Image (cartoon, rainbow, N blue to C red; front, side, top):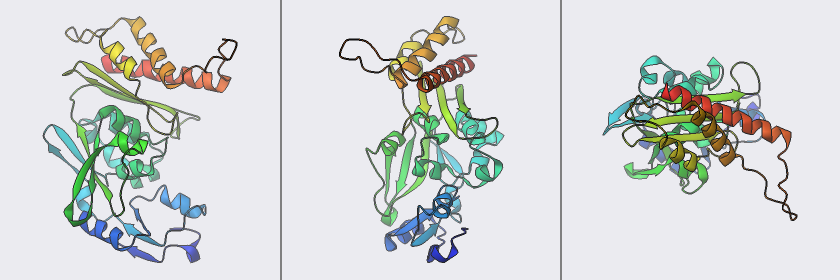
Length: 297
Protein backbone atom coordinates (compact mmCIF):
# COMPACT_ATOMS: atom_id res chain seq x y z
CA UNK A 1 0.00 0.00 0.00
CA UNK A 2 2.88 2.36 0.64
CA UNK A 3 6.61 2.56 0.04
CA UNK A 4 7.05 3.65 3.67
CA UNK A 5 6.18 0.25 5.17
CA UNK A 6 8.08 0.65 8.48
CA UNK A 7 6.00 3.72 9.30
CA UNK A 8 2.67 2.44 8.01
CA UNK A 9 -0.44 1.94 10.13
CA UNK A 10 -0.04 -0.49 13.04
CA UNK A 11 -3.64 -1.81 12.99
CA UNK A 12 -6.21 -2.43 10.28
CA UNK A 13 -9.87 -3.13 11.09
CA UNK A 14 -12.24 -4.43 8.40
CA UNK A 15 -15.85 -4.05 9.59
CA UNK A 16 -18.72 -5.66 7.67
CA UNK A 17 -21.42 -3.08 8.46
CA UNK A 18 -21.67 0.67 8.78
CA UNK A 19 -22.47 0.46 12.50
CA UNK A 20 -19.43 -1.77 13.07
CA UNK A 21 -17.26 0.80 11.30
CA UNK A 22 -18.59 3.57 13.53
CA UNK A 23 -17.89 1.50 16.65
CA UNK A 24 -14.37 0.76 15.41
CA UNK A 25 -13.68 4.46 14.93
CA UNK A 26 -15.05 5.22 18.37
CA UNK A 27 -12.80 2.54 19.90
CA UNK A 28 -9.76 3.82 18.01
CA UNK A 29 -9.96 7.64 18.02
CA UNK A 30 -6.66 7.91 16.12
CA UNK A 31 -7.86 5.59 13.33
CA UNK A 32 -8.46 6.89 9.82
CA UNK A 33 -11.31 5.47 7.67
CA UNK A 34 -10.28 4.36 4.19
CA UNK A 35 -12.35 3.23 1.21
CA UNK A 36 -10.66 3.69 -2.16
CA UNK A 37 -7.60 5.33 -0.61
CA UNK A 38 -6.84 7.47 -3.67
CA UNK A 39 -6.26 10.57 -1.53
CA UNK A 40 -5.19 8.86 1.70
CA UNK A 41 -2.39 6.79 0.21
CA UNK A 42 -1.07 9.80 -1.68
CA UNK A 43 -0.76 11.60 1.64
CA UNK A 44 0.87 8.55 3.26
CA UNK A 45 3.38 8.05 0.46
CA UNK A 46 4.32 11.73 0.47
CA UNK A 47 4.94 11.66 4.21
CA UNK A 48 2.10 14.08 5.03
CA UNK A 49 0.12 11.50 7.02
CA UNK A 50 1.09 8.64 9.33
CA UNK A 51 -2.15 7.04 10.57
CA UNK A 52 -1.84 4.96 13.74
CA UNK A 53 -4.64 2.68 12.54
CA UNK A 54 -6.97 2.21 9.58
CA UNK A 55 -10.64 1.27 9.42
CA UNK A 56 -11.27 -0.22 5.99
CA UNK A 57 -14.73 0.37 4.52
CA UNK A 58 -14.40 -1.84 1.45
CA UNK A 59 -16.37 -4.79 2.89
CA UNK A 60 -19.47 -2.78 3.80
CA UNK A 61 -21.85 -3.83 1.03
CA UNK A 62 -24.75 -1.66 2.25
CA UNK A 63 -22.97 1.55 1.17
CA UNK A 64 -21.90 0.33 -2.27
CA UNK A 65 -25.28 0.67 -4.01
CA UNK A 66 -28.34 2.90 -4.03
CA UNK A 67 -32.07 2.82 -3.39
CA UNK A 68 -35.12 4.98 -4.07
CA UNK A 69 -36.78 6.84 -1.22
CA UNK A 70 -39.58 9.44 -1.42
CA UNK A 71 -38.58 10.98 -4.75
CA UNK A 72 -34.89 10.83 -3.89
CA UNK A 73 -31.99 8.51 -4.60
CA UNK A 74 -30.16 7.34 -1.48
CA UNK A 75 -26.60 6.78 -2.69
CA UNK A 76 -24.17 4.73 -0.66
CA UNK A 77 -20.97 6.58 0.20
CA UNK A 78 -18.99 3.57 -1.02
CA UNK A 79 -20.16 3.92 -4.63
CA UNK A 80 -17.11 4.11 -6.89
CA UNK A 81 -16.73 6.59 -9.71
CA UNK A 82 -16.63 3.70 -12.16
CA UNK A 83 -19.99 2.40 -10.92
CA UNK A 84 -21.57 5.85 -11.06
CA UNK A 85 -20.36 6.29 -14.62
CA UNK A 86 -22.36 3.35 -15.97
CA UNK A 87 -25.47 3.90 -18.15
CA UNK A 88 -28.04 2.78 -15.57
CA UNK A 89 -26.75 5.33 -13.05
CA UNK A 90 -26.43 7.99 -15.76
CA UNK A 91 -30.14 7.60 -16.49
CA UNK A 92 -30.79 8.38 -12.83
CA UNK A 93 -28.47 11.33 -12.14
CA UNK A 94 -26.79 12.35 -15.43
CA UNK A 95 -24.60 15.15 -14.08
CA UNK A 96 -23.13 13.00 -11.31
CA UNK A 97 -22.43 10.23 -13.81
CA UNK A 98 -20.66 12.71 -16.09
CA UNK A 99 -18.56 13.95 -13.16
CA UNK A 100 -17.68 10.36 -12.22
CA UNK A 101 -16.53 9.59 -15.76
CA UNK A 102 -14.32 12.70 -15.71
CA UNK A 103 -12.78 11.92 -12.31
CA UNK A 104 -9.49 10.65 -13.71
CA UNK A 105 -7.89 7.57 -15.28
CA UNK A 106 -9.49 4.13 -14.87
CA UNK A 107 -7.44 3.15 -11.81
CA UNK A 108 -8.71 6.24 -9.96
CA UNK A 109 -12.33 5.74 -11.05
CA UNK A 110 -12.26 2.06 -10.04
CA UNK A 111 -11.04 2.84 -6.52
CA UNK A 112 -12.25 6.34 -5.63
CA UNK A 113 -15.63 6.65 -3.91
CA UNK A 114 -18.39 9.21 -3.61
CA UNK A 115 -17.96 9.46 0.15
CA UNK A 116 -14.22 9.88 -0.17
CA UNK A 117 -14.69 12.71 -2.67
CA UNK A 118 -16.89 14.49 -0.13
CA UNK A 119 -14.82 13.74 2.97
CA UNK A 120 -11.52 14.84 1.43
CA UNK A 121 -13.29 18.00 0.22
CA UNK A 122 -10.56 18.78 -2.32
CA UNK A 123 -11.59 21.90 -4.30
CA UNK A 124 -11.07 19.97 -7.55
CA UNK A 125 -13.40 17.11 -6.53
CA UNK A 126 -15.61 16.62 -9.58
CA UNK A 127 -18.65 15.35 -7.66
CA UNK A 128 -18.79 18.35 -5.33
CA UNK A 129 -20.30 21.02 -7.66
CA UNK A 130 -22.86 18.48 -8.87
CA UNK A 131 -23.95 17.68 -5.31
CA UNK A 132 -24.07 21.42 -4.53
CA UNK A 133 -26.25 22.14 -7.57
CA UNK A 134 -28.55 19.23 -6.69
CA UNK A 135 -28.72 20.49 -3.08
CA UNK A 136 -27.89 17.01 -1.82
CA UNK A 137 -27.90 16.08 1.85
CA UNK A 138 -25.61 13.71 3.72
CA UNK A 139 -26.81 10.94 6.02
CA UNK A 140 -24.21 10.77 8.80
CA UNK A 141 -23.88 7.53 10.78
CA UNK A 142 -23.10 7.74 14.49
CA UNK A 143 -22.83 5.34 17.39
CA UNK A 144 -25.70 3.08 18.50
CA UNK A 145 -27.35 3.34 15.09
CA UNK A 146 -27.77 7.13 15.27
CA UNK A 147 -28.34 8.95 11.97
CA UNK A 148 -28.46 12.67 11.25
CA UNK A 149 -28.74 14.64 8.02
CA UNK A 150 -26.89 17.77 6.98
CA UNK A 151 -26.73 19.62 3.63
CA UNK A 152 -23.57 18.74 1.73
CA UNK A 153 -22.85 22.47 1.41
CA UNK A 154 -22.74 22.79 5.21
CA UNK A 155 -20.03 20.16 5.50
CA UNK A 156 -17.96 21.63 2.67
CA UNK A 157 -18.22 25.12 4.16
CA UNK A 158 -17.34 23.94 7.65
CA UNK A 159 -20.72 25.00 9.05
CA UNK A 160 -21.43 21.49 10.35
CA UNK A 161 -18.52 19.08 10.65
CA UNK A 162 -18.27 15.35 11.26
CA UNK A 163 -18.01 14.53 14.94
CA UNK A 164 -15.71 11.97 16.49
CA UNK A 165 -16.68 8.46 15.47
CA UNK A 166 -19.04 9.57 12.68
CA UNK A 167 -18.98 8.49 9.06
CA UNK A 168 -20.71 9.63 5.87
CA UNK A 169 -23.07 6.74 5.20
CA UNK A 170 -25.28 7.94 2.37
CA UNK A 171 -25.94 10.88 0.08
CA UNK A 172 -29.59 11.83 -0.52
CA UNK A 173 -30.14 13.35 -3.97
CA UNK A 174 -33.49 14.61 -5.33
CA UNK A 175 -34.58 12.96 -8.57
CA UNK A 176 -35.52 15.92 -10.79
CA UNK A 177 -36.16 13.94 -14.01
CA UNK A 178 -34.84 16.93 -15.98
CA UNK A 179 -31.70 17.80 -17.96
CA UNK A 180 -28.44 18.02 -16.01
CA UNK A 181 -24.97 18.92 -17.27
CA UNK A 182 -21.45 18.74 -15.86
CA UNK A 183 -18.52 20.33 -17.69
CA UNK A 184 -14.95 20.93 -16.65
CA UNK A 185 -11.78 22.46 -18.05
CA UNK A 186 -8.39 20.90 -17.33
CA UNK A 187 -4.87 22.12 -17.87
CA UNK A 188 -4.11 19.33 -20.34
CA UNK A 189 -5.74 16.97 -22.83
CA UNK A 190 -7.49 13.96 -21.36
CA UNK A 191 -8.47 13.22 -17.75
CA UNK A 192 -6.97 15.60 -15.23
CA UNK A 193 -7.68 17.86 -12.29
CA UNK A 194 -10.18 20.59 -13.06
CA UNK A 195 -9.05 24.17 -13.51
CA UNK A 196 -12.74 25.07 -13.36
CA UNK A 197 -15.95 23.06 -13.50
CA UNK A 198 -19.65 23.84 -13.75
CA UNK A 199 -22.65 21.73 -12.81
CA UNK A 200 -26.07 22.90 -13.95
CA UNK A 201 -29.46 21.29 -13.34
CA UNK A 202 -32.95 22.32 -14.36
CA UNK A 203 -35.87 22.06 -11.96
CA UNK A 204 -39.00 22.37 -14.15
CA UNK A 205 -41.37 21.72 -11.25
CA UNK A 206 -40.10 24.87 -9.54
CA UNK A 207 -39.17 26.58 -12.81
CA UNK A 208 -35.68 26.99 -11.49
CA UNK A 209 -32.07 26.72 -12.59
CA UNK A 210 -29.38 25.60 -10.17
CA UNK A 211 -25.71 26.09 -10.93
CA UNK A 212 -22.51 25.43 -9.01
CA UNK A 213 -18.94 26.30 -9.98
CA UNK A 214 -16.12 24.09 -8.75
CA UNK A 215 -12.31 24.11 -8.49
CA UNK A 216 -11.88 27.90 -8.34
CA UNK A 217 -12.49 28.22 -4.59
CA UNK A 218 -12.15 26.00 -1.50
CA UNK A 219 -15.77 24.90 -1.96
CA UNK A 220 -18.31 25.00 -4.84
CA UNK A 221 -19.84 28.43 -5.43
CA UNK A 222 -23.56 29.00 -6.13
CA UNK A 223 -24.29 32.16 -8.19
CA UNK A 224 -27.81 32.51 -6.80
CA UNK A 225 -28.65 35.85 -8.42
CA UNK A 226 -27.60 34.55 -11.84
CA UNK A 227 -29.74 31.44 -11.33
CA UNK A 228 -32.82 33.49 -10.43
CA UNK A 229 -32.25 35.95 -13.28
CA UNK A 230 -31.94 33.38 -16.06
CA UNK A 231 -34.84 31.26 -14.76
CA UNK A 232 -37.15 34.22 -15.39
CA UNK A 233 -36.02 34.39 -19.04
CA UNK A 234 -36.78 30.76 -19.86
CA UNK A 235 -40.12 30.00 -21.50
CA UNK A 236 -40.92 26.95 -19.41
CA UNK A 237 -44.20 26.36 -21.28
CA UNK A 238 -42.65 26.40 -24.75
CA UNK A 239 -39.89 23.76 -24.85
CA UNK A 240 -37.81 25.80 -22.40
CA UNK A 241 -36.93 28.33 -25.09
CA UNK A 242 -34.51 31.19 -24.43
CA UNK A 243 -32.95 33.87 -26.62
CA UNK A 244 -29.31 33.12 -27.57
CA UNK A 245 -28.08 36.41 -26.10
CA UNK A 246 -29.28 35.28 -22.67
CA UNK A 247 -26.92 32.31 -22.74
CA UNK A 248 -23.90 34.56 -23.17
CA UNK A 249 -25.14 36.98 -20.54
CA UNK A 250 -25.71 34.11 -18.12
CA UNK A 251 -22.16 32.86 -18.55
CA UNK A 252 -20.76 36.32 -17.88
CA UNK A 253 -23.08 36.80 -14.90
CA UNK A 254 -21.93 33.52 -13.33
CA UNK A 255 -18.25 34.27 -13.95
CA UNK A 256 -18.47 37.78 -12.52
CA UNK A 257 -20.31 36.51 -9.45
CA UNK A 258 -17.69 33.83 -8.76
CA UNK A 259 -14.62 35.86 -9.77
CA UNK A 260 -15.55 39.50 -9.03
CA UNK A 261 -13.58 42.59 -9.95
CA UNK A 262 -11.11 43.94 -7.46
CA UNK A 263 -12.20 46.59 -4.98
CA UNK A 264 -11.80 50.21 -6.19
CA UNK A 265 -8.57 51.98 -5.26
CA UNK A 266 -8.50 55.11 -3.12
CA UNK A 267 -8.64 57.29 -6.25
CA UNK A 268 -11.80 55.49 -7.41
CA UNK A 269 -10.16 53.50 -10.19
CA UNK A 270 -10.80 49.77 -10.46
CA UNK A 271 -7.57 47.72 -10.76
CA UNK A 272 -7.43 45.21 -13.60
CA UNK A 273 -7.51 41.56 -12.66
CA UNK A 274 -4.28 39.67 -13.42
CA UNK A 275 -4.24 37.99 -16.86
CA UNK A 276 -4.40 34.49 -15.33
CA UNK A 277 -7.50 35.44 -13.32
CA UNK A 278 -9.15 37.03 -16.37
CA UNK A 279 -8.49 33.84 -18.33
CA UNK A 280 -10.06 31.79 -15.53
CA UNK A 281 -13.11 34.06 -15.52
CA UNK A 282 -13.50 33.63 -19.29
CA UNK A 283 -13.23 29.87 -18.80
CA UNK A 284 -15.99 29.86 -16.17
CA UNK A 285 -18.19 32.02 -18.43
CA UNK A 286 -17.74 29.62 -21.35
CA UNK A 287 -18.49 26.56 -19.21
CA UNK A 288 -21.63 28.13 -17.71
CA UNK A 289 -22.88 29.26 -21.13
CA UNK A 290 -22.35 25.84 -22.67
CA UNK A 291 -23.85 24.01 -19.70
CA UNK A 292 -27.07 26.02 -19.84
CA UNK A 293 -27.24 25.69 -23.63
CA UNK A 294 -26.91 21.93 -23.46
CA UNK A 295 -29.44 21.60 -20.65
CA UNK A 296 -32.04 23.65 -22.53
CA UNK A 297 -31.44 21.85 -25.82
